[in-house]
Picture 1 (spheres, one colour):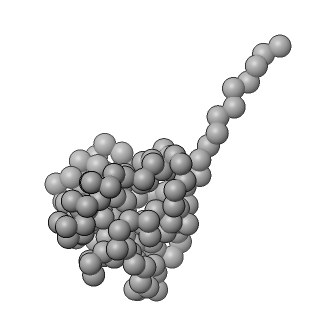
Picture 2 (spheres, rainbow, N blue to C red; picture 1 turned 30 degrees about the vertical axis):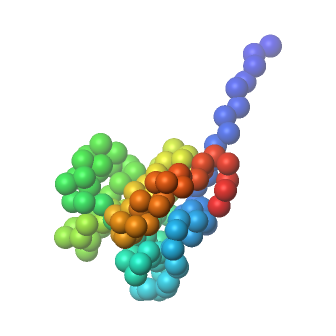
Length: 133
């Protein structure tokens, strides 16, 4: 008898983006352009377009080019956002919740004031595997 190994597949969705984003210090959700956006200290760091199959995060242009070249199935930029410092991430291409968490925290750190980033480092990150959001 041949045993089959089952693999638990974690499906990451827009609700996970919202849950993790709102778990980050001083994050608020605000609708803009008919979509949810997430902000810290008034600065936007995540948007979730209507189709909810991807999200956009802050990303320096030099890093963005490397991300897209390395993983074009995961990262992309629509033509109207080429001049911005943002990158889109396909939810279906993410490996797991930990990867989603890391991407969202990185974007949050780019928008958050230094005092929050420093406090976040002291508090330590939430373990995405524990579902603390």
